[in-house]
Image (tube, rainbow, N blue to C red):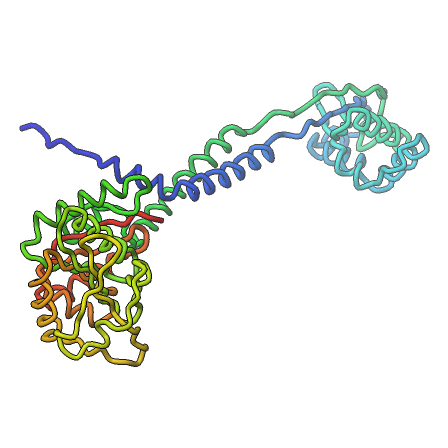
Length: 417
């Protein structure tokens, strides 16, 4: 039996990279910089070692000399070559020859002593980052050692000293420098991508049509794309005609004012240009805007009506397009007179006069009057704005629509930033 084919959704990966590319590049660059710093720090500093050889012989001494432990002798010579008195003498000699910045601490840190038992050679070395400095340190400490210990030391006698140090260069390479740089870059990319993944999981804003489709809404089209608006509106209008079985339509949003008035106005004008008698209703009773946008003077409207017979649509400059304004805006503490029965009576009258009645309402999650309208019309379209509307907004709006048994035609994605 063949194993099932595993398919990887690369579109999700690409979407993640596009959304968080600035953060990914930034974190990767910072970690790469840290790796480069570590690589630079791992570079070995060039060191120069100068060694002076002191030839010593074991004298024919009593039996106690023969019993001398070479390791003990080595320790003795090391102590003698680095004691404060000897180093101070070497410092004074160096200063007399012009090295005024030398202190005994520098000498103590630089001087090394090695005793080679088989060749009876004591090596006094100095290691610094300057070849001349290393040579002078080794030479002057050896001279001070020779001057200080002319006689025997633990059965050993200084026979000869070579005061011309041999200088060797050490270090200057890298210890895994490239490795640190690569690790920094790779680690930065992995960390930033993991952070982007976590942010994506916790981000509830709508980023794509796929996220809305998962909530059970039908995609009716796009709006807000520069240069493509006329054709986009035609697509939306055609889709609405296909699914709406009646004359009345509400254009609303889950939350905020995110383009529902723009969409309603575009649809109404398009139907009017096709010869349909269209009525645009401004159902935003607290923040009306359609009268101003259409250049219509509206002294009265929905807020001033007593009965449905009081409503008088106003003609606009667009042929076949009329407006029913909201009237004087309601204050925040004023109650709307619209209930479901009133809305139903208004719609019955208006649909008898027009081919299309398009109602703009405020957001479903923030205004009660919007819920009255969607319960009475034959179809509702929700505007969802990319990067603004959240999943929770849509779910709350859908719950309100379900409670009013509204007919939801679908959603329109507003991709305008």
